[in-house]
Image (cartoon, rainbow, N blue to C red; front, side, top):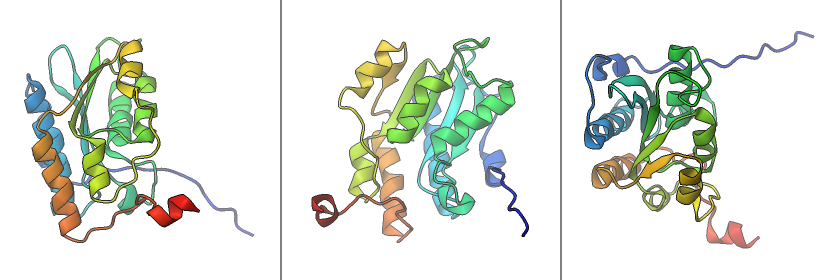
Length: 200
């Protein structure tokens, strides 16, 4: 009997290279979020994954360290959320699993949508010093995604760990990507349990 071979490989879609600019400084929160939203929107338009985009930026010179898009469905990988992909790509580019705490540059994670329970858990371990969010948890749940169980005081918990959280940056723009994804009939994977399922 042949033993199966195990490996994980995440490759960003080819269109990402045409969208990003590693030399440009993204100085404002809005400029950073515009890129995250564009990543999410293009991921939907090109049918290369879910309606979520993220990016890691250097807090010092405001340049992009690494982008991320949701690759759950095409990669058959339940952990390939945009934030996790961006963290992984940034770590590979920087040659470090720590994106700031012990490294030479502080970094910020920008996410088109508030992190789900998994991505929230990964945020402090990544080493980022800031988290910037576009759409809210409620916006993702409104189209059927299950964002998991998160503590009500998650913002305060991240603050206590030294991670500054900024919410609602270009929220309407980010939420419109979610709505467009759902309106087009795309797959709502890991969908929220129905009321009947919750009562079982």
